[in-house]
Image 1 (cartoon, rainbow, N blue to C red):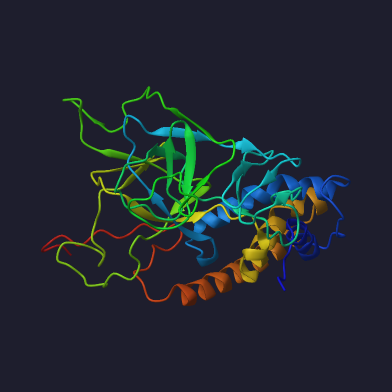
Image 2: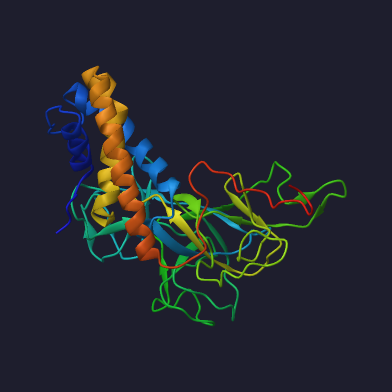
Length: 329
């Protein structure tokens, strides 16, 4: 059984840390309103802080070409019966993927364990389906204005084959209009970089090959091979042209899937952010900050154990030192 089951559990843990009575909802009290305002902001900041194993995902990215279509998913409707593979947007625009058939009146993101929906972390664009192209689960294509999602790896099955493809109910696509010089290389104007649209609910990039041998090479500071990837304006820029299995940290909102120590750190940070508005006590603020520092360190230590041996990231807030010049002091 999950220790934390709903966001309210995190809020009440935060209130407990700063000595404020627990709440039954986020609307009826000052404590509810203050924690509601900060919760998601703090969660996203904490997810971006590290490559948390519970929020790390992989998805297929394909380069944007002239026929690539931006996808619009339908808003969730409680009166609609959804099939496995359907994607909907909730009232906040957050995208959810149906993982069960006959999915009726099951609100995505509702409190507690919800087996009908999971967060959608897949592509936001679709290319035209091409015969004999290898496709993988999660790939999205468009055929005659119909959006399909791949559910079984293959290299030659038409999207009309329901064994390999699912029609995403109500999803529509439209070719985007580019009004900025994305991928253009001044001064010639030649397009030398390919663009990949970042996936849904993207938070930050994760190491793409974290188990690469950490062999120091002359003139470099790390064992990893350098690449030319750059993130700008919701796109990945690169000279690569092949499909990319992209590893990233996703905006995970389901607290039942989160590590308990992460939730403890999230709650302590929430307590620190709301201590002064709710208690006007510097002592309570310092207490929450101390709790946050301890629990975050423990959470990161456990995360590092699960992640295993890999080239480490820079310490938070640190800059990597430049190599000493030859003959320098």
